[in-house]
Image (cartoon, rainbow, N blue to C red; front, side, top):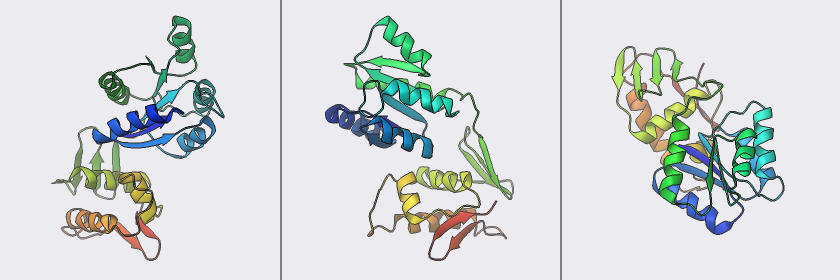
Length: 223
């Protein structure tokens, strides 16, 4: 999953982010509310973990603003404010769950997984298509012209990212950040390697190529 952690305590934030990354998730960590609002508005996340007491813009106001903008990403409030009234206030502000500090990481991980399983109020597509290619996100199944295509997890994530942005060029940097959580590494050829592997499975056995290289820019799948 792609998760945004919004926590101003550096030690706590690093603890959460490192633990989730060890479980295989892609995690962004932001320490203030205003930057987090911009990030959450511009990027698709499966879950937001939000501290209530944040500099710049507090967690309650952050979540209320997102909900007002029709952003329905599940929110787990993480805070030291553990009274019944505090929990009610957080849930009424648009939070989906509420965990009080101090907490066990195992419980946080389980709550995040439970939130990700819930259907969103504005249901996302669960089947993505381009031509005769079909990706079923629930069943984790990819087919083309009726033939099942076996993809490794990173190949699946890369294809999903391209399909969700059909017709839009995705630069190497965009793909590194979205699929590998790498902000900048001019030496890596991981994108090129995985695009090549993906083409070998998705394009080469078929008559029409779907994954297009836009020279000097990046890659895209045409709508």
